Image (cartoon, rainbow, N blue to C red; front, top):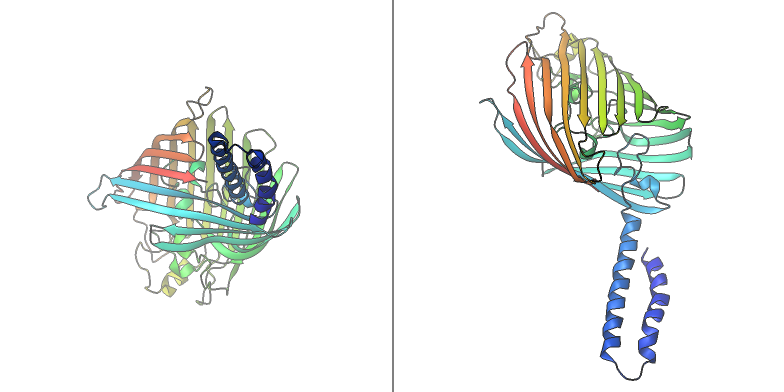
Length: 411
């Protein structure tokens, strides 16, 4: 990059310097003009150099967000991007303290070795003091219909597990259904293929399975994620996804996950998760819907094998169900304004203990109806501010309502 810049700089400086050097009167105005041109040239060269490393946001690639996809748009070399989110949560209940948290700061670092070989990584600083590797994949781009991927992969389920940059969803917090049943952000070590054919896109991976001894009713399937760190690999899983985009502004698809989660604990703990989703986006209107169901075998065995055996209502259900529907409309979509102002509402219903085996009990705390409504403002494409209110209803103990305020950026 620097060599290329120097290659440009030499001839350019000759053109800039030649007229003043030929002058014999030592004209101060010519010297000032020379300094101005050199400064402009230096700024332009720096802009070009940084543009190679940090290209602008563009199209999404293989399910990833705009910033995570930047490496696929450059010819070769290094690419960087990222995003961040800060969140203020104000609870109406006495049992939960209000909180102001810098949720995450993300750096995407990618390197394109050749036209076909690409490294893509996401490094996350969470809660300002915890560092995680969110994904790290090595892709071989064979052709549009068939490509290969290996590494720490994002499982291709739902809307947000792959596409979770803050400008891609309206609410301050991710939907509960895509937190507890589709446990965003869900990543595991694995290999697979992906591609596009006509109006269809697909991804198919084999990964290590959950560690089911960490399933708890309070966190759904989320506790069983292994996240790529010294993963137990006695049990594996397969996950696949297909999307259809044959109509402008419409996406319809689904995904399926199946694998054991016992991980040498003496039980199989087979987990099957299915979800289907649809989105309509047109003229400032966006409507999303998602339905999911998960089944877990041998919950009794998994609960007994936990580090602290689970009793009563602590065990996860044999069946977990959830759905949500969301609608938002950009009030500035049909104006000349470059900003976005999007009021939205989302309804979720989920039950993390839909079916509970004996001797466990369902006390209703995990059967939730949730309405989230608020507004998102984007003063520019890369920056977003959000405020929303969440109204919880359960069939057990009350979950307090909550006010959320968030700020996010992407680059």
